Amino acid sequence: MYQPEESVARHLEAMHVSSPEPCGLDVLEFALLPRQGQELARLLGLPATLKLVENYGGLTLRIPYGETPLGRAMLADIAKRVDHDTARALARKYAATELYIPNCKLALVKVRDAAILRDRAELAEQGLSERQLVQVLALRYRLCDRYIWRILKKPSPADPPAQRQGSLL
Image (cartoon, rainbow, N blue to C red):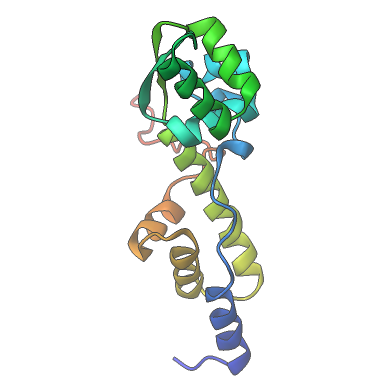
C-alpha cells in the first residue's frame, strides 16, 4: 500500500518521541486505590502514599518504634525514600505492627490504559493509521503490539453495556 512521504515521516517521528512520564498514581482517583491504599492516603496524604507504594509496594513492613539502631535505620530508609513526616506518621500509627503496602497494580493498569487511549486519540489526529499508532504506542509504553490492540478494543468504561438479549415476552 502506498503512503505519502509526509505520513511516513510523521509515523517515524512519532515512533522516536521519548516515552511519556511513567503511568503513575499521581493522576489516580482515590477510589481506584485498594482499601489499604485508601487508609494510608487518609493518614499520610495521597502524594506520600504514592511514594510509599512506588518504593515499597507489595511488601509487608514491620514498622519500628525507632528506639533501636535497626529501627532507626528502617525509619531513616523510609524518610530517605519518601520523607521524614511520613516515617514519623507511620511510626506513630503502626509501630510494632506489620503493615502491608499494596502495589496498586490494578489502579496502575487502569491509569496506564487511560493514558494509552488518550495518546491513541492524539496520534489519530496527527493522521497516523491504526497500525502505525499501535506501533508507536507499543514502543512508548514498552508493551507488545498485540496487547496494545487488546487495550484499544476493550469497551470504554463510559460506554453503556450493550443489551445482549431481547425481551422474551
